[in-house]
Image (cartoon, rainbow, N blue to C red):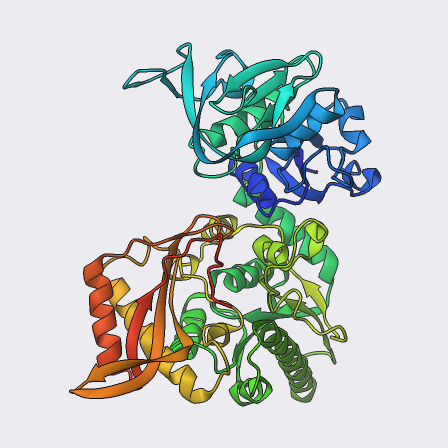
Amino acid sequence: MPHDTLIVLDFGSQYAQLIARRVREQRVYSELVHWDAPAEQVLANPAVKGFILSGGPASVYEPGAPTLPAYVLASGLPVLGICYGMQLLTHSLGGRVAPSQAREYGPAEIELLDAGSPLFADCTCQAAGADSNTHHPSPFTLPVWMSHGDRIERLPAGWQPLARSANSPYAAMGDPARGYYGLQFHPEVTHTPQGAALLRAFAVDVCGAAADWTPANFIAEAIAAVRAQVGGEHVLCGLSGGVDSSVVAALLHQAIGDQLTCLFVDHGLLRQGEAEQVVETFQRTMHMRLEAVNASEAFLTDLAGVVDPEAKRKCIGNRFIRVFEEESARIAAQWVAGGDRSPATIGYLAQGTLYPDVIESASGSSEKAARTIKTHHNVGGLPEDMTFQLIEPLRLLFKDEVRAVGEALGLPAEIVWRHPFPGPGLAIRVLGEVTWQRLETLRQADAILLQELAAAGLYRGTAQVFAVLLPVKSVGVMGDKRTYADVVALRAVTSDDFMTADWARLPYELLARVSNRIVNEVAGVNRVVYDITSKPPGTIEWE
C-alpha cells in the first residue's frame, strides 16, 4: 500500500532535497521530482496529497525560467511555494514579482499578520518587543533564514498576506480556501527554528497526509521489494564496515538469508587498523557469510600517476566492480566444486548508496536540477559494462534515516554511529598522487586525531572528523634545523543531514595536543592546519 506522499518539485536548488528530508522527519513520505518531469510520472502515485515547490536560482520573469507544471494547479491539491516556488505561484496566478532593491540573505525576522493561519498554528513565537516566548500573541515574530533577490510586490487575486519582513512586504502569503501557501524564507534549513513545525502543519493539517513513514514500515517494505527483485538468485553485498553498507547487509539478510554473501575489499586506502577491525566487528556482531579480499595492489596500481579527483573516483569505482566480478566468479566456482550448492552465478550487487550520493552526483530523479558537485564512486564512477544488476535499498534515504533503520534492525551502536568514511577511502584525502608512503603518513596523522577526539569524549558530538595530506610543503624549524616537509589539514564538522555542515568548534587544547603529536610522531610532517570552512561553500571531503 503506497504511503501518503508529498511531491517536492525541484526548480534547481541544491537544497531541494532538504525539503524532502524535513518533511520525512515529520513521518510523512516525500519524493523529490524535477519540475519538468512528465505529469503521468508524477501523478502515477495515487497517494499524492500535495506539492511543495522548491527554491531555485532563476527569476520568474526571465526568458527560459522554469515554469509551473499545469498539473500542479489542475490537481486541486494543496501547494506550498518556497522562495522561487512562492514567486512562481505568484507569477502564474497573476501577481507581480520584481527585483528587490535590497537582497535578503541570512537571518531575518518576520512579523506574523495572521496568527490564526493553519500554517503557523504550531509555532511558538516571540511577541514583538517582548522578552519571553508566548503562544499566538498579536503581533508576534519568528526568526527565519532568507536567501532571495526578488520579492512579491502584488498578490494574486484571493491571496492574503500572512507575514512581512523589513525587506519583503509579503514574507508569507496564503489562499486558505484552495490550500495554497507561499513562504519567501526557507523553512527547510535549521536556521529557521520553527521550520519543521511549518512543514508539518502543511503536510499533516493542510494536506491531510498520514504520518506513517517510520523505520519499521520502511524495513517491511524494503524486505518485500528485495524478495520480489531477487527471487531465488544470489546477491553479493559490498561491505565497507560503515553504517550504510552494514544496514544494507542486515536488511538483505532478513530478506533472503543464505542467498547473501558479503564481500569486504581492502583496497589499501583504509585507516590504520581498519581492515582488521571491520572483519572482527562484523563477524562478532552480524553472523553472516563474509568473504574478505586484499586488493590493495590492484587499486594502487590503477591510481599511479592519477591526481585529478574525479579521475580518482572513477578509477576506484571501476576497480571495485572488477574485484566484485572476479570474487563472485570465484565464490560461485567454490560452491560448485564443494557440491553443497547448485551451480550458480551471482547476478546482483548490493551497495549502500544514499540519497545525498545521488544528488551530489547529479544522478537519479534530480539529474536535470542539480549540477554535479562530485562524482561518487558508487554512482557516477561505475563502469558501463558491469555484469551485475544493482540492489540499492537505501538509495532514497538520508543518513539519519539510515541510522534509524539500523537501530530498528538491532545493529550495535558502534556500527550505527560510526563516522562516515568515503568509499574511495584515503585516496580523496591524499591530495595529489596517491602513493603507499603518502597513505602511511596520512594514516598515522588520522589515527592520532581520532584517538585524541575519542579521549576527549567528542566522537558522538561530531559528525565527521579526519585528516588530509596536502600536496604542498612548508618551511619549519625542528631540532634547531630548517625543515621542508608535508602539511596536514584537520577537518571536523557537525551535521544532521550531510548536505549541509558546519565546522566543529573543537577546543583549542585538543587541537594543540593533536598538532603536537602529529609533528612529533609522524615523520615528514612539520605543520598542521585546521579547516574552518562550512558546507557550503566547501564540501565535507576535500576531493
